[in-house]
Image (cartoon, rainbow, N blue to C red; front, side):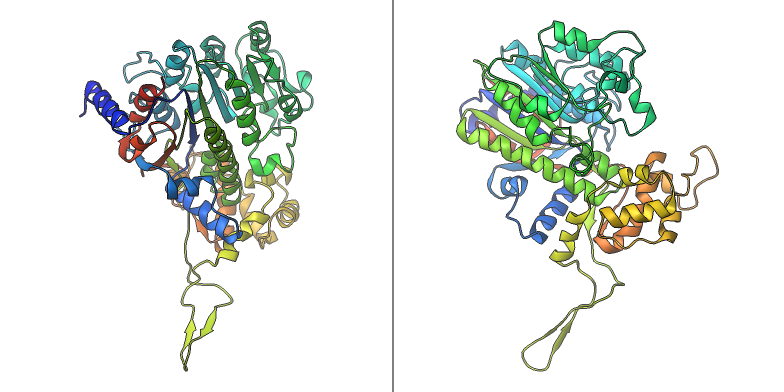
Length: 493
């Protein structure tokens, strides 16, 4: 096992060997759950759409890149809390633990060290700001489920910009979201309730600490970053809407790209530079749901945020941009199938006729997912669990064939985890009952989308890391996830 001292020496040597100057600004973009399977699906879909390669594909083709091992303390597969702690704090820990090592000792994060250096800092997530990935950069708690305590620690962190979801953890226990913010859509009854267990009004406390607070896209975009030094944006009760649903239903919420652009506008005023973490969080969630169309929506939204950061770095040469993931989720991929209609044929010169042996997924077929305009989860909610209504909604929001018999299969109640063993052992690799219906939809649509899934949980496969800017050459090779923290700290001067 490599000691911490040896690891630091290796990082320093790699940094020196890159021949680059230190970075004044560091932007770390984390695609939660964004394994190589996700990136492959995005590239295939992009080509099917006839589009030029996106920012991530361009980085892989042109920029220094490497791979990152994702295991947690003693385990091959990680959860997001342990993974984020490794990336943010440079130490392995156990699942569910945030900002602490395997013995419960508090750790300093990249954000903490940036603040001590006099840099401004920012956190952006499409999930709640108290969730695992952003939480590891400012909180130290033994379990990621302590959202009330994590929200309070965000106030104590000194972060200049924090944008994401999680509004219900910042209002007093006796309040509801709808009574204070009637334009915010809860979609589920429990999301309208406060997530706190006390009467603290953290919104008032943030305001008293000098933060401008925004709750919708218009107020975020109109925020004057030239006169605002601290900004808190909370745009949903819990996690923000999937991007595919944001564009259809929750248009009051900003996109990840818009949040990133606004954060860069504010943080770039820092005399000593800044550290910004941007998380595409729902790549992971949509993959847990096995929802290929919604996942591609999240990947495209994240890709646009990456492009925004790369544009900033082109104009600010002292900026290091790092793009990576905490782990893979779901193991998705376009695959060929045996049974299908419309086999292709092609006449060769002479008398030979080439015939398609299997359906290898044509690029136009890969583009069909662009026509999905709602997530599986949102369609199930809108159906009010009525089969005929679900058929109507699926046909309205997707290009897929879907029958009343299909709808009845999807809307069967998820078997209880406490009851008899599920015949197909679905829960062995799909532990959340809330994902049961989306998993059923994924199975029905697989023959039409060409995308299948290995699981509904995380995987242990290494994830990519790419970088542009000062010290970027150091990312080449195979690294442990704890290396990322030390790399950033020794590059950020």
